[in-house]
Image 1: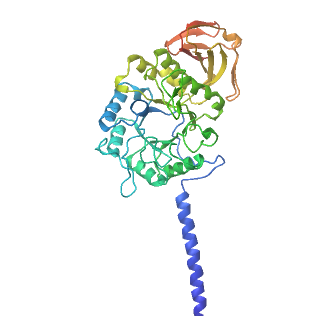
Image 2 (image 1 turned 30 degrees about the vertical axis):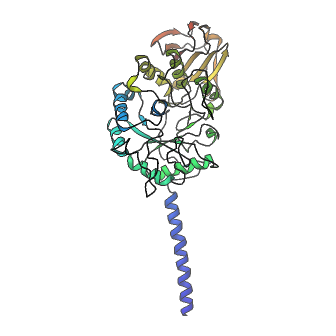
Image 3 (image 1 turned 90 degrees about the vertical axis):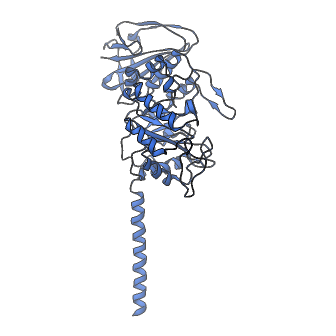
Length: 422
C-alpha cells in the first residue's frame, strides 16, 4: 500500500510538472503567433502609412552625443519637420559603450550620453516625437559595438524600459545566422515587452525580406546602403554604396509586396547631403511615389531653405502617405525620360516625369494617348472619357487638366510631379 501511494505521488508530481511547464510555455509565447507567412502576431498598427523620421547615420555616423542630439531634436521641431509629419528620431550605430556591463546589459556610452538613454528618450517624447535606437543581429554592430546576438530578449526589455518606439536592426557580423529566423526572434522579443516598438529590418535585401517580413517588421530594407550620388555608385572597398537611381531601378520588381504595415525600405534620404537641388527634388519625388519610408538623414541645423522646402512639401508627402499604400510603377522609359504612375485613394493618381539624363529634355505628353491601368490596385483611368485636374506638386499650383497635353522642358536630373484628381 505504501509503495502504491509513492507511485501515485510520483505520477501526480510528474503531471503537475508537465502542466506547469505547459502553462509557462504558453505564457512565454502568448504575444507570439506563427502565421501562414512565417510571421509574428501583430497586435498593433504601427505603420499604416510609410514611417517618417530622421536618422543620425548619413551625416554623423558614430560621432553622436547627447548635446548634438538634443539640439537636433529642437531643430526638428523648429524647422517644421514634426508638423510636416515626421515623428521618429532615431539614433543609429555608435550610441553604446564598447562592452556590455557585468550583468551582460547594454550601456549607453557614458562620455557621449552622461545623462543616460532614458533621459534622452524622455526629452524626445517631451517634444511630441517618438524615439528610435539601433542594434544589429550579429555579435557586433557594423561599427564594432556590442551586437544583440544571444541577448534578444534582455535587449528588448531594456529598450522598452527606456521608452524606445523604433528599433533599426542591422545585419553585420552575423556569420551563419539564418536571416528570417534571426529577425523573427527579435520581433518576438519586442512583442514580449508589451510596448509597441516599430521594427525596421535592415539586412540590405540580401535574403529577399519582402517574401517573409510582412508581419515580422513594419519596414524592411530592400537594397544595400545609399550614397549621396544621383546615378553613380560609390565603391567603399569591400562593398558598394548605391546611388539614388540604382536603388530606384530595384524597386519596380517588388512593388506588389509594399503596403500598410509592411513597407519596402529604399534606405534613408540623402536630401540636403550634397546633391543638386534638382537631384534632391527628384530623389524625394520618387521616394514619395514608391511609398517608401521617409527617413531624413541630413544635418537639420544647417538645412538650406531649398532642402527644407523639399523635405516639408506637404503635397509631396501626401502622395507618400496615401492610405492605399500602393507603390508606383514605371509606365514608360524613353531616352532616360521616365514616367512613373502611382494609384491613389478615391481613384486619384500621382504621375512623376523623371529626367535621368545629364541634359534638359522636352516633354510633350498627350494624356489621352496614355490610359492608366494598374493590375495591383485594379485602378484605371481613360483620359478620353474622364478628365482630371492637374496639380503641380513642386510649383504648388494648379496646372490645367488632362484635356491638354503636358509640354515642358525638364532640367537634367530633375522631376515634375502631378497630383491628378477628378
